[in-house]
Length: 56
Image 1 (cartoon, helix red, strand yellow):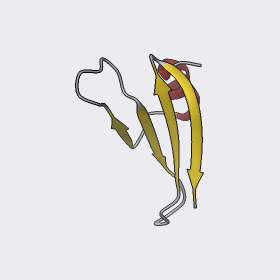
Image 2 (cartoon, one colour):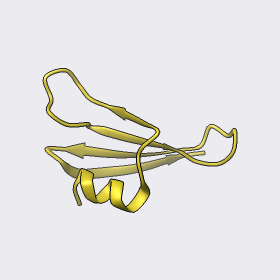
Image 3 (spheres, one colour):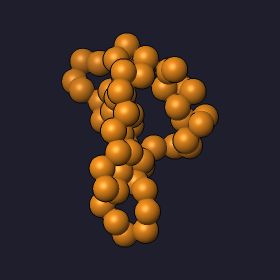
Image 4 (tube, one colour):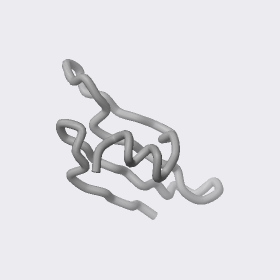
């Protein structure tokens, strides 16, 4: 799965982290819940999903 497919599935991320010198985002973060610190993070390397975490 790549970044475009993640965005098509989950929508536009609330925050995207891009490391200096990299052409695309490495972490897409989605806020979950209402006022809660819950967040889903999708990790990418070379535009391929390498992991997903969910903090609640």
